[in-house]
Amino acid sequence: QILCTNKTRLQLSFVAKRFVIIMIDSIFMANERGDRIVERYYRGVSNKQSIRAFRHQFIATKKLTKPIIRIDDTTFFHIKVDDVHLGASSKENCNPALVFEFLYAIAGLFREYFTKINPSNVRDNFVLVYELLDECMDNGYPQITAVEILKSFIRLAGESRALTRQEAKIKKALTKTITGVNEWRPNKDLVYEKNEVFIDALESVNVLQSTNGNILRADVTGQVHLIESWNQRVTKDSQVIMKTKLSGTPTCKFGMNDKVRLRKEAAEGKLRRAVKVVSLDDVTFHRCVRLSKFDQDRTITFVPPDGEFELMKYRVTSEVTLPFRVIAIVNEKGRNRVEYDVKIKPKFKEQLVANDVVVKIPVPENATAKQKHIKVRSGKAKYYPTHNAIVWKFRRFLGSAKNGYRLQAEVQRLHSVKETPWVRPPITLQFTVPMFTSSGFHVRFLKVIENTGYSTVKWVRYITRAGQYQIRI
Image (cartoon, rainbow, N blue to C red; front, side, top):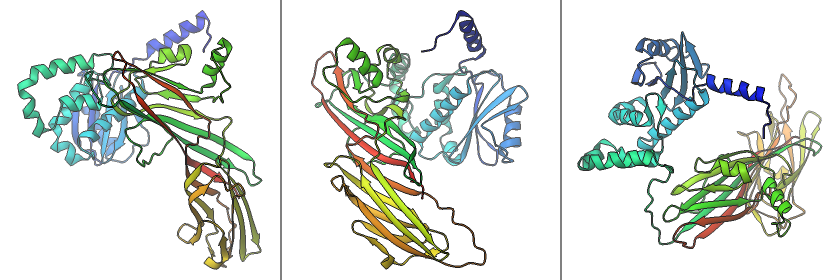
């Protein structure tokens, strides 16, 4: 909450009036030489000479060092997408974050139609590109960038002829969909034989441990997704993913062990038993979530899109449970030898198993190691000269191995004309621990409310992966 006086409110309102929400004069695309590919003018304010000057002075000369550049009274916003420069121009004092959000949304939309955005693909589909630009923006104001809706009405050249007979009906449906309340769920007549919801809570734990074993930094980034199936998937960030197969237009209520919410329930006497709480920071939601309800009582209420989507992202910086404890002793014996004694212990429950655990132990650049000098009782360890590291791998790391596993190794350093001190890069870890969360995040309930009152099958899975997991030596 922000408490402000009447004077502060007047100042905030004055600042808000100075910002136009978003008003774009033109959208343009150019190749790496600065040649024009597509230019679309919306307001007739920006002229071709200013865009030509931007292309020739900055794109062609490779002087694009900043994402926002101002020439005379025109502001240019620029991003690089594959082999194409995508930009927007405006003479108004618009919000730059919203402009970049729109540009990235347009780039994602183009990728849905033609996988790679390059000059040849844009020229081959220039009619489609102009159609999309006309539908996505009206008089400089963004209208719609939902891929599912636009793909159902704007199709490739080979498919567009089949829609000519129903042109009036399609235009009417498109207008109704765009102006609807839930544009992310355009089809309200969905019917599934089996109504299911799959929830994935994916977390990425980042750790920096000092040489004496103290934790200098530990935080978790997480996301909630709804997904279609539980096949193996690779994600760069932690997330809560969801995939819904629900008939009609249901309303969902999502509950988690949020610290603020549970404390409120405990004060009201609604909490029946003690529950571990988690303090979430930097929470962001999918646009289907009703933010007013969340601000009011910390309830996550939404009408879900059909299919897979990312419900929320979050970050946790306190009370982080580390899945592994690494103890490393590295001794330099004179100028010729380096001895390693590394021990790794699991910190998760005995019934859990970590998969694909990789411990990367750095060695000096002018060093070499024989396989007989690397001793382990579990897993496989090997020296990789190209990586300048000893890589210790476990296919499965049992949580019941409370004593952990140990690696002892010795490497020989080669003499050189110019001796440089070893910088000692940190040991890094990679792993995947199913059904474990470092933050303590837990899904308490998911209620699906629909007029017909059908039953829903719900599935929840937790996965923790390594982010920047580093141990200094």
